[in-house]
Image 1 (cartoon, rainbow, N blue to C red):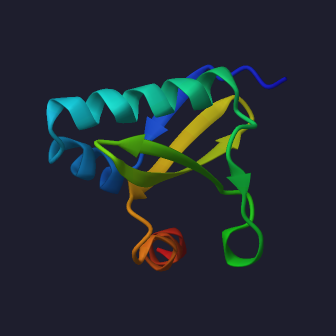
Image 2 (image 1 turned 135 degrees about the vertical axis):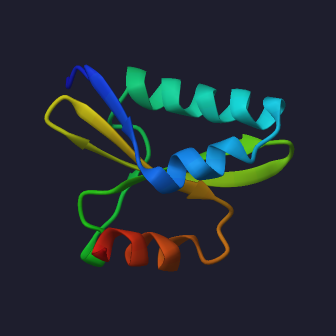
Length: 96
């Protein structure tokens, strides 16, 4: 079992989080906490997104996706959002 010692937010993740309401931030923090406790949770992606895991969670009756990656003992939080254009935007961000 991997023990995570550090969590790093991408600039896009931090910018998106600022725009959320308090209830949505709590739901997002719960999702990050569950990933922190069990880094293998979520679906591992293949192809262009190899190494990235996507965790699904609910916030205000809406399903959201959270993209992250565990490298050694560091958890990288890339982005989150609804399913619409999620993977396209994630690929674009990771190419940069």
